[in-house]
Amino acid sequence: MICSVQLVKKVIEASSSSEEQESSSDEDLLLIHLMRNQPKKHAKIENYILSVVPRYCDMDFKSHFRLTRTVVEKVLEDLQLQPIKLNITKPSVSPEHAFLLTLWVLANQESFRGIADRFGLSRGHAHTIFIQTVKRMYAARDRYIIWPQNAVSLRRKILDFNNLRGNLSFPNVVGCVDGSHILINGPRGDDSYYNRKGTHSMLIQGICDSEMLFTDIYCGWPGSTHDSRMWKESPIYEKLKTNLLGEEFHLLGDTAYPLETFIMVPYKDNGHLTKKQKKFNQILSSTRVVIEQAFGRLKGIWRRLKFLNIQNLSYFKFIIIATCMLHNILIRENIDQVENLEAEEEFIEQDIDSVPLENIVINARAKQKREQLTVQLEHF
Image 1 (cartoon, rainbow, N blue to C red):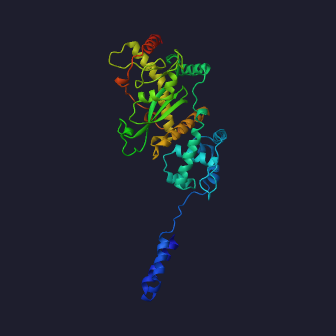
Image 2 (image 1 turned 60 degrees about the horizontal axis):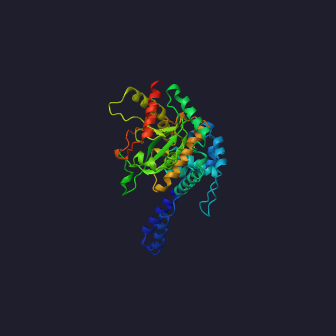
Image 3 (image 1 turned 45 degrees about the vertical axis):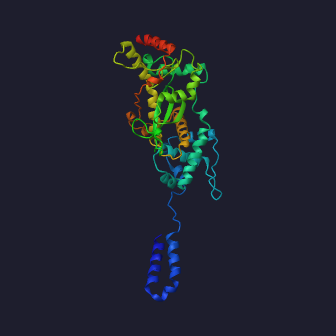
């Protein structure tokens, strides 16, 4: 580049030094124009995947990509990802290259300019690889986000919750449900993404077990949507209404959810709760906190979810589901991520909204079930 500038200067000086050279001025100007407008090749890290990554120690590899090398190989084998062909002039991108790029994108808030430089790609190609990879992961979601399939697995979930808090555990809990906001750059002309906290967001609804494993994820609603509406529109709600859990088992939710036989929620604190109702609320909340911790862990490790800068909102579900799959993989593989977590309080959702009055329908059987549990918990 320096040589090009010096050459341009010489051409300019030569073109103005003497009137005798006027005949070649057009050629000189053309040369200057070509030099000024020649494509600039951006510097990139060469062979990052092939040359740099293999030199990472195991700790550094896990710090950068969140998974261990062994687990990366295991996931690649399970997903059976295919090479990604970008265009006819470039070689295909290997599944390992594409997956490591995707892990890097989700683990950081780095711009695609920086990511492209690191992985030796253009910004457009880096983004294409990322989106294609999360779409392919989405297609395998049922192998990683798994709802209990039978009575045996349901009872195992209940036993795990009982062991979580001992005598202070809420009885017969299969999972805990909550919603969480993912901040986005709000689309122009659409106020539905403008939430009550004054930011633009999209919603995730998650159900997790006692280990913080997500057993169901539903996402994509605008940030202004109330949790109870999203809940009633979700596929899992329709299944639960068919007596999926039976009369005895249930989920736990906060006051944003309507009381049903399959979901127990706290008594609304109107200032006149009885002692046993307060104890019911306390035990329920102490058990239900695992879903808040699950969302905290999700956003703490996969930091792209702190703010998702996407122009095409249809990509949202692919990114969210792929990230929740990785969240479950970390837990199942028992990969410690303490060094990647920030203060837990920063991530815990504090949604104290109650169900809108117009959505409240008195469910006599659910009310009776909650009263029976209240009496049972009084003696804990």
